[in-house]
Length: 253
Image (tube, rainbow, N blue to C red; front, side, top):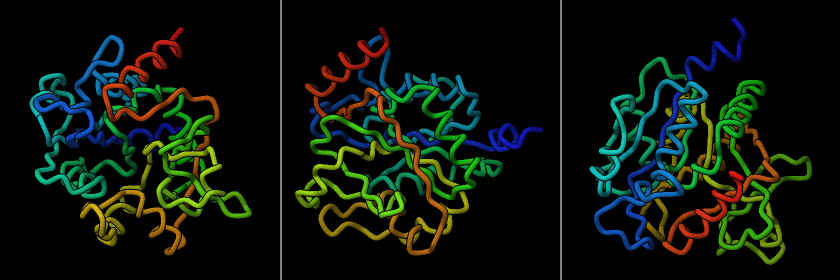
């Protein structure tokens, strides 16, 4: 059996859909359940994950969970994040529900991941398996990276940090390679290092991006897949949702 096919059979995905999305001002509906073009955002993600035959899908629910769960069929596993304590904590909740046969797992947001499509995720999976990486990040080159976390690389081109815009220097703000929040991990890596993620002093939450620093310290193999022409945008407000819909429909033409 081809090694990529064999590894693909033990691949799962965690879709983060528990957040409140405060800036969306939606009190009864989780933002992943809001429509982007012809269907709710999370259904675009479910569709392309099934298209590339990822069998094990864990959806992390929390805020307005029924608005998400009523959209999905019986082919997904639910994990509940009862307290919104950040993305790393959400993945800890998901790992408890992840089937034991899953050895590598995608982690992606349930809203803006609608832009990735099956080809991008297949390329990410191939990069992860071919390099035998413990942690593989998708990065995107954006013409206007305003407000987004920048990818910082060393002189050899290896990723060494993700710097949020508010913490970036003027030089770093000129970098247009950003982190959209799509990752592929070995499950063993997550089990080993998630407990080392520290709580943010500012928000009190635990963030997945901390795993990059932890992985580098422990000399784990970390790779990236950089996409130059992917039409993508974060979706945090109603205005951004309208912009996202225009971008999404334009890209489909």
